[in-house]
Length: 61
Image (cartoon, rainbow, N blue to C red):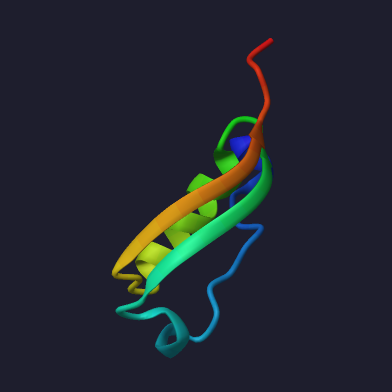
């Protein structure tokens, strides 16, 4: 799953992110790969802090 999302997202203009506190919202966390990749990109763009909120989490098989 992590390989599927690597490079799938891009940060907006750095000035929109730099120094800001951000909240990522995802409807379902299965492996967490999507949130991790988005967080990685936003940190690189200069986000001051990043929190995540999911509505549901899939149980491990």
